[in-house]
Structures are given as structure tokens and as C-alpha cells.
Amino acid sequence: MSRVIRMAGVVLAVWLVVSGMQALAQEATAAVPVESGTSLWKTLKTGGPLMVPLGLLSVATIALGVFGFLTVRESKMLTPHLLPPLEIAIDNLQVNEAMTICQGSPSMLTNILNAGLLRIRDGYLDMPSMEKAMEEASLEETSAGLKLISYLSIVAQLSPMVGLLGTVSGMIKAFDKIGKGAMGRPELLAGNIGEALITTATGLLIGIPAMFLYFHLKGRYTANVTRLGRVLGNLSHRLVVASRAKADADVPAGDPA
Image 1: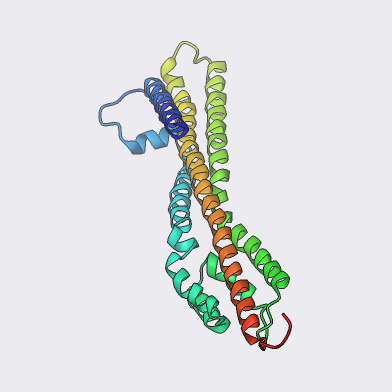
Image 2 (image 1 turned 135 degrees about the horizontal axis):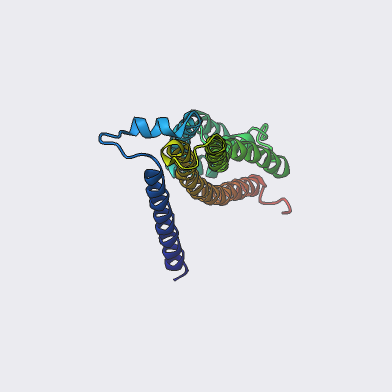
């Protein structure tokens, strides 16, 4: 039920955003003189020089979004197809075999596990040292994976600010013309008002999807990291169980436990 309520809230928010964007677009269209054959290029030119950084921010949003979806894939972070051979190698205490699997298929799971297995020397299992190495590698791997996704947050905050700068620039130019006697001639102010509205709408159209992508990708990334911790914990437990079973098997029958 709570998931349905959240989805309804998201749909309502998207509807409100789209309605607001339509209203802004209508205002911008009303402010700019309507000509037959008006193209997208003319609209972009009306937005002024700040449309260039806004265009770059839109490209960055698309690129970071594609990269983010590729990063948060379960097959990329958790590599579930490697779990069966890793479990078999760990159950048989074949540490070198497990390290070969990890090094042959780099991922967040295998990199962290390999860092812990490197602390095993000559068959001696030092769990505190191994867990410390895995903890250090986990911090490094999760920080590196989240770094580029976090750039979406920067784009989401920067785009509306650039659009607001265009708004201020357009209004300054409009008031300057008013001061020079253009008060009764709206056709002289239409271009500057159009610049103000178009840059504002463009900044919002870039910032809102970027913010949505950031929270969506971050949520999926955090969920995968949480599951990753559980998987690594299970592998560590299997290693401890296998090590104790081998130690018990090596104790002669007449020796005390």
C-alpha cells in the first residue's frame, strides 16, 4: 500500500511539473513575436548565450544518466554468476582458486573479496585482518562508484541557477530599454522577455530530470551495496566454517578438543 501511495505521489508530482512547464512555454511563446516558420534554432537564439552552458548541462545529464544505469546493474556490482564457483572454492578452502576468479572478473564484489583473501597467508585465517581489509576496500569501491552519480546532483542544482542567470540578464536588458524610451513599444521588449523565460524553462527542464535520475540511481546503488554486504558476510561465514571443519578433521582422535 505504501508503494502505491509513493507511486501516486510521483505521478502527481510529474503531472504538476509538466503542467508548469507547459505554462512557462506558453508564456515564453507569448513573449516572443510569433513568426511563420519559427524553428528550434530561432528559439535557442532567443535564449541568448546562456543556452550554450545549458546545452552542455543537458548533454552531461544524458551521459551521466546512461553511465549511472550501467553502473547500478546487479550484474555489474554483484556479479551473481560468480557466486557458485566462489562458494565452491571457499568451501574447499581453495583460496588461490577464489582469488583467480576474483581477479579474472573485476567487479565491486570480487574486488572487495579479493582484498580480504589477500590477507590469508600460508593457510592461516586471520578473520579480524581479513574483515579490516574488506572494510577498507568496500569504502574505496563504494566511493568510486557513487562519485560520477553524484555529479547528477550538481547538474540538477546548477541548471536552474544558470536559467535564473538568464532571467536576470534578460530583465536587465528589458529595463535598460524601458529606461531608453521603449515603455510604449512592447515589440522592443519581447526579445529580452523571451530570453528570460526561455532560459528559466530550459534550466528547469534540465534540472528536474537530473534530480530525479540522481535520487533514483542513488537508491538503486544503495540497495545493491546493502545486498553486497550481506553476500560478503555469507562468504566470510562459509570460509570460517570450512576452516574450522578442516581444523577439527586434522585433530587426531586421541587428542583433546
